[in-house]
Length: 263
Image (cartoon, rainbow, N blue to C red):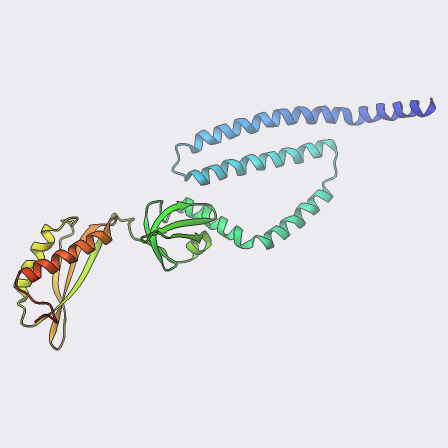
């Protein structure tokens, strides 16, 4: 009976000591969860009209939510009188180990955030990077997916893209198509130029502005070189180039002009 009385006394003392803290902690937990939900809804509405990539928007929302949950738990531990020293040491040790193990992954992540914020390229852009040329099909937080023109999927870590040169072929909306042709001196340049200008004017996909430029760029021993500069849309550039080369070849031959090597 004495032991039972002692147990009741200790339990009563414990309730008097920790009971109010537990009640306060429960109240703060409920209120804290409500505040976190309100902040998350506000953040979601605030980010919705912003020109922020959906992947980055989701990450920001998740990061803020997790951060608030961790702060709330730390606050409750402080209220309940739980010593933080051991937890701080464990978290610090885990952070150092994780940082060393995931240094490359974290670098890709940081680079992905910068790419999504600065937007050096968008999904659908034609780019050249890491000796790869193709269309950006997806931008993730850790990597970017590029589909090459021969339909290969190339996954490039974002750290490579943030620290290397990226050539965006389609950002300006139009590109200059350069064609070089060689002819013997027996070919009259003025006649050749008229054929080229007429061929370019009739070709599909050529832009009127900037204007086409045709000129002699090199005088060799037995031939001269003609440079043709025309402008076309960035998307579909290669199809336009092939079509124009075919038309030039047919029109020049049809105009009675022989290419070098033709008798």
